[in-house]
Each structure stands twice: as C-alpha cells, then as structure tokens.
Length: 320
Image 1 (tube, one colour):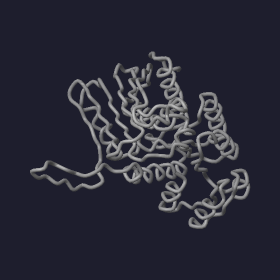
Image 2 (cartoon, rainbow, N blue to C red):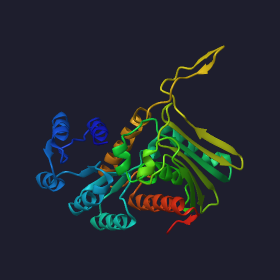
Image 3 (cartoon, rainbow, N blue to C red):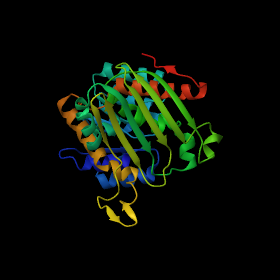
Image 4 (cartoon, rainbow, N blue to C red):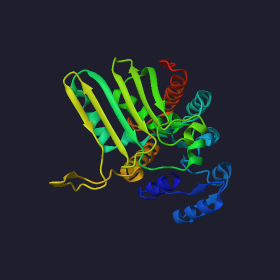
C-alpha cells in the first residue's frame, strides 16, 4: 500500500515526500530514491530529521499502527493511517485520545467512501424513500499468500472492515446489533488458524434499516464489488465493474469478460482519497467523507463484534 500512496502523493500538486520509513531497506530505499526522498529505518529518525513535515502516512502492518500513530501525534503531525485504525479497542481509544490531545487531523484509509460509484449510490439514497435495507458485496479477485492470511488479523479485521465502514457510511446510522454466518468453503488453510473464507454479516442500524454484507476471500472471476440501498419508494445500486467497457452480444450470449482486479478497480479512488487528505492538511478540516479516528474506533468495535457473533453463534450488541 505504501507504493500506491506514494504514487498518489507524487501526483498531487504542491505535495512533496521528504522521507520513506521502513525497516526493510532494499525496497524502501528504492522507493525513496524514486520519490526524491530520504530513507530512514525508524519513524523517530525521520521526524527528527524533518521537523517541518506536515503529515505522516502510515501504511505498515496493522500491529504497528498504534506506535506510529502515537509517535506522529506527539510530533504534532497530521496522520493518514491505513485500515484498520488499530487491532484492539483499547489501542483505538488510546490513539484517538492522543490525536485529539495533539490537535491534529487523522484520516483512516477507508477509500471506498471516495469511490465515484458508491458516492453516486449514497447521493441518490434520498430518492428511494425510507431506508429499509443496505446491501454490500465484496468478493476479492486477488488471491493472497497463506502466510498473509495467517497474520492478517482475520477476515473481519482485514477484509470485511472495508465493507463494515462502507455500509455504516451508506446507512448514515449507527450499528446496534450484528450477527454472522460463515465457514471455510474453498481453502482449508483458513481452518488451521481459525479463520474463514466465506461470510455473510447482518447488521441492525439505529434508524431501523438492516444491513447485509457478503464476503468471499477469493472469486475466480475478479473483484465483485456491489452496493445497493433499498427503500420504501425504490432502490439504487451500482456494481460490479468489469475490466473493460466493451460488451459483446451474440448467439452465444452476452459477455463483458472478467471483472476488474481489486487495485485496478480502486486505483482512481486511492488517488481521490489521498488528494482529499492533503487538502485537509492545508485547510485544517477533514473532508466530510473521510473516516476519522472516532469512525475508525467504531469500525474496530464492529469488526470484533462480528468475530464474537460468529464464534458464539449469536447476535451481539455493539458497544457504544
């Protein structure tokens, strides 16, 4: 993710990367050279050497988010941190408090809030009457390594967290209860570390609407991303997006080819997200679409509630 964010930052007028930080020197030093930046193997060293830097972009494994957030906040730097915000509620509370005490901005990397298609659905939500149901489908078209899955934090913290954030954003209401059905249907390696590759999550919102999330760790036909809002007066939906806009119709049927792979599908969205963050650093106010630290903390609570609901086989109330 660091490379994608660096590409976006390099494309934003007036924005300059001054440091790239990573304990793995070979890849990071190459990226630093390409950006015209200096390489450091620790954030503290980069902050000390660049006191005039305005912001820190954190794209580390989630287990390192807390320490980097606290270090950046202590240095009074605005913060962009990849999802999830942290791995535990306790860490999230500590980080959110430190951010507020420092008076800096924090944006969590839930880029789907900035996606053109999903924004279009949200903008039309008022035309479908009283909201009854919000549906999100997210089937990953990129297969990752077994070692990645094992250390990812599980399907809810690693993958579904995007969909949990998006469905709350679309519903514009706080989740109150959650239930989950899930299993290992394709890749037995998930059983070895207590995870699943297939899940359906049902969420009740404070406004009475019901949310429905469908997740597959891998779909052979590409990244199947869909959203739909259903109301008393109609529905609005978008997705999935194919790799090409060309559609061929013949006696053999209608074919648009495979769906887009994940990073191609959201490449433009990554840029819009980062451009929004840089504008926020300049104005001192987060974009209304952005996921702030409080939203990030709620996302962790919801993801952990999903894990609890699945393991205990019951509906779980979301802590306030």
